[in-house]
Image (tube, rainbow, N blue to C red):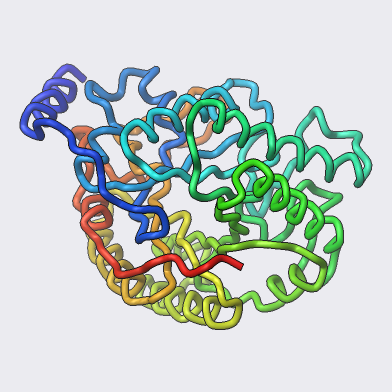
Length: 352
């Protein structure tokens, strides 16, 4: 560890003074979800300011998740606001990813927060509104103005289950779309020009039914966000990464054309120890930067290295995240640098 810390300090000395990034609102975003950063720093994983280092490498946007009341305190509102203040000070644009849960929300888990467990639908919808306002007002009071906010995380099957659970065109669409509309209205109340996002997984997968049902039931959004993990063939029906990237490009173009709004890749990840990861990333970036209304790419938790894992993973028997984009010495890898060096003529059109 001492060797790693020494290398990190030398890296900072060589980098010299940091200059603010010049990335206006609405331009191409090349970012990262750094929600684990504060816990990693608590565990002494960095001898330098990772937020500043990533800015020096070219990062211009940070994504941060927020849980309602997670037992560890990490990624709850105070932790998120603290990281957001640092990101804003570092000249970063900010995306807030509201999970509406006490822990990770995803296509397999959309658990109602413990404090909301006995709510009926009107009360739950008001809880979504109030929580959204509470999170965004906390940022406003801290002097942070986020550019984007996600109403839910990876919600192709809805959120706040079972009340807001959907399955393709079936299920509780009035409730799920109602939650999304409530979050949309609350976000605009605090920041009228914030870009409100609905986020689903599987960038390669066509889901016309989802967007048609969302619109038909009164759901609202300004931007669509997708997750893209092209090397996870076990989860993607055995498709090759080449097929995954091609399908994702095709789907992004279709979504833009059909729904007349920008599309963001809010999560991407490559296997840290796979020699083909750089090629996969280069290929996808070349595709994404060629799409006029693709708004940018966020790498999910690239700062993970050295088999680090959150303390709570240990008793659960969960392993380390294996898609970080830092070297074993704790420096941004070539995969991450490829994203941070990317450019696109993208400019945000008027939101709906």
